[in-house]
Image 1 (cartoon, rainbow, N blue to C red):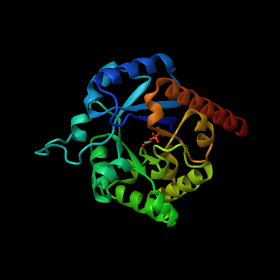
Image 2: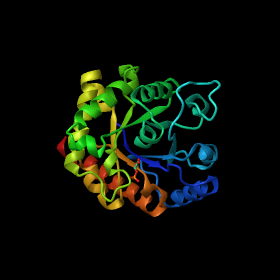
Image 3: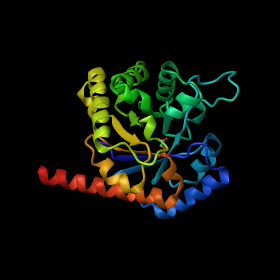
Image 4: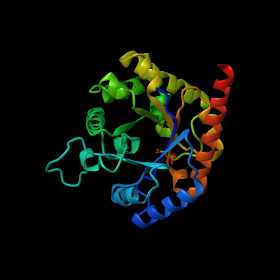
Length: 265
Ligand code: PGA
């Protein structure tokens, strides 16, 4: 199964309902419909409903930034995947800010991934090492543990649609993304984990995207890294000019890759 490229806008805890709506209107004017790029917006819970009413569904799909792993019950302050299933196609799960500020451990991330899948929502599972873990040469172990636990309740069929975002924690909110060689090494390790667990069909079908200081000028280099299917964009997604520029660049890379493939075959 071959998917189009995927670009996810993580608006984090920015923008109120009005500002979210304004950003969507601006993006709608700037962004063209590209058959080879899927654009997913992840507003906060508060704005999900109104944004769902407003977007052109051919151009944009929606993601939550998180969700609770129980479908319904006495859990004050939580929103479940089952409550959001009519509104979203995707959910970011296990973002490092959740792991860090909300103490989300491996088991919680696993349960959230399972809850999303149970509700027909595609998980965008975030994995990545901290600066300290990289310095201690623990990157592979960290990625292995995060992936193996998070997917432990999924069947090989569930995994075919999955998205994994490689987000080295040290590159999030930084001045530059990770280098292409660091991204390549991590992405190939991530795909290797999937192959070991679920076989080569799953390895090929899983979409692996990169997040951490994605700005327009870095898009070409990142998108050309073998095995990278897209981007998870934080800050630059709040600026409609930068984000639409990112989408056009991803589209152009996708086009040139399609042409190369056509020439080769
Ligand atoms: P950034 O955030 O693009 O602002 O670095 C990325 C993310 O946290 O998903």
